[in-house]
Image (cartoon, rainbow, N blue to C red; front, side, top):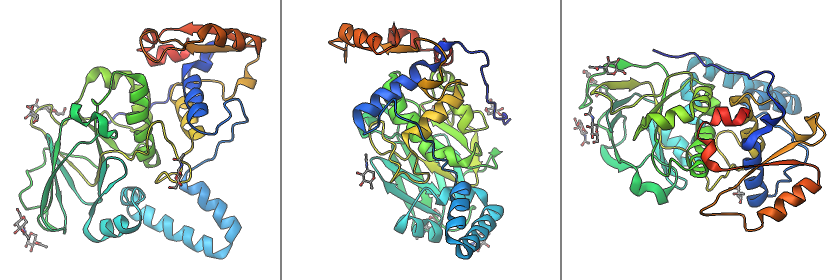
Amino acid sequence: MGKKLKVEVVFGATNYSIAFLLLLVWLFAAAFFYVNPLGSCKYQLTYWRNSLIRSSSIKGDVAIEEETEVIKVVKEDPFKFHLRRLVRDEDKMQLENTGFSCHTQISEVCVSDRPVIIDNYTIHIPSSQPNFTRFMKPYAEVNAHYLVSSIQIVAGGDDNQSNSSPACHITHDVPAVVFSGRGFAGNLYHELSEIIIPLFITTFHFRSQVKFVITDFNPRWVKKYTRILNRLSGYEPINPAENGTVHCFPGGVIGLNYYGLLTLNSTDDIPGKYSMADFRKFLRESYGLKYENVFQIKRERPVLLLISRKNSRTFLNEREMVALMEEVGFEVVVVKPSGMSDLGKFARE
Ligand SMILES: *[C@@H]1O[C@H](CO)[C@@H](O)[C@H](O)[C@H]1NC(C)=O
Ligand SMILES: *[C@@H]1O[C@H](CO)[C@@H](O)[C@H](O)[C@H]1NC(C)=O
Ligand SMILES: *[C@@H]1O[C@H](CO)[C@@H](O)[C@H](O)[C@H]1NC(C)=O
Ligand SMILES: *[C@@H]1O[C@H](CO)[C@@H](O)[C@H](O)[C@H]1NC(C)=O
Ligand SMILES: *[C@@H]1O[C@H](CO)[C@@H](O)[C@H](O)[C@H]1NC(C)=O
């Protein structure tokens, strides 16, 4: 049933393999944030373990005590620990007290560290909260909600699985992450901004021990992002509407944390405080790209890929841009977005 995480490394990649991914992210990073695209890249490791090691060396005994505490929690209940890291303050207290809490960043995200029973687009969450039923759209960007199917959350009941929930057909042993694969899917920019980055922020710290339950399931979309999905989850994505199967999970997240257009906010993102550099590193690893940085390319003129759109958001001064890029030392290759639908192939070329 589960598929082992597979990281493909493409050896012998050509000099072109620096690829559009870096360029795209650089361009947006440069445009939206104060990032110098060619500046030195420092990669902060954001795994909790590393930060613990760092803090323990700074703070001495107290931190080491904290560390053993955390490791104890992880040993007892790794997935609960990872789920609780997705919420903070009152939401965290509510999650600990009732097993369920929802917060609104831009869109709503709900977290349960108790059993989650998924019956098509209805999600039963037995918890000790007062009963409630609510509809939500598991997609990050509110503007796209009109395209996204609603799911129904039936929470509360009692602390007991034996309330009105249906019986499980398949019992999974890792948490579910439920999100819609529709929204503005089909547009690379929206897919990165509204699905892939939120998915990265929400699930990277699970270290592949999650299953994706994708509503509005589109096999073509799933195929397009196979490498990214396989790196974040060690299992095949599940289509809950496939055939009356009721899936049970030990916990779950419904919706994805999202902080705005192409936003990774290293001071604020929960749980990981990820930066654009972390995401870039993640993409590079997912696509097996060789170079971290333009200075590693041992080639007289590094290749710069310019993605040239024709109908909207066109560069009005494309010719001048190309001339300048060539002047500063790049070999410029202009591509049309239509050649980008096979991302793996595109990234290698
Ligand atoms: C909540 O729902 C369960 C199952 O539907 C029912 O048994 C229980 O009485 C309800 N509790 C409240 C407080 O309404
Ligand atoms: C849970 O269900 C069992 C029987 O199904 C019952 O004996 C028990 O009291 C219930 N627990 C709660 C907290 O309602
Ligand atoms: C699941 O729900 C969707 C939307 O409500 C519906 O169109 C579909 O037929 C359902 N699938 C099954 C297997 O019941
Ligand atoms: C429904 O799908 C599940 C998971 O994909 C599969 O294991 C099961 O055999 C299918 N059931 C039917 C009746 O097709
Ligand atoms: C990042 O989050 C902090 C704290 O919430 C906020 O003050 C800051 O404006 C955010 N930065 C960006 C670029 O969104």
